[in-house]
Length: 203
View (cartoon, rainbow, N blue to C red):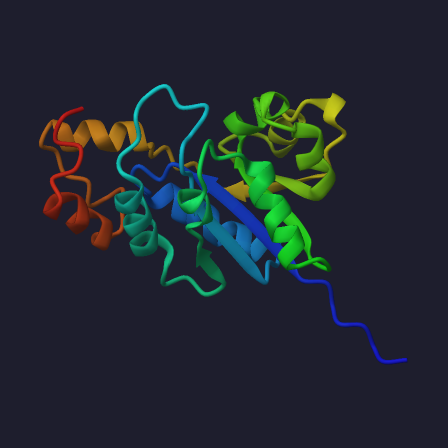
């Protein structure tokens, strides 16, 4: 019998990316390294069922994601949720990745705030069955971030360590609307894109 090929390790990191910023990029780099991923799918959400505000057009968020992450080895900026009709559910993307890579171990990379709400996600039990949950711990104890996923889900978890970056997309949109600079919180290509396309000029 031949030697079995090693199991691939594939991550999923989704978000609005409205806009993507340096904390997002740091998380992507940490996930690739700390989880030893072969590939990380960065997936801008399509129709976000959980967002109260209207997102920027999908094409613009996708373009910014490609500028923010496209140069990182191992990253695939994946537009499948934007192309999908109806609400964007993480479980649908995980099941598609599982079908495409049936021998791979899947990892879902999320922030501590998302981890706290994971139990309310669509088909949460199936999410934790399919994927190992990697919670990004920013300026908190690793155990605290790990424990923030509802214990009743029985999720397999791996903490992901990050420096205490405090950037947020909400703050960046506010800075642009106020005419303040954002060069210190986004990659240069994203800053240029926002300026050229006049994004976020109204908070």
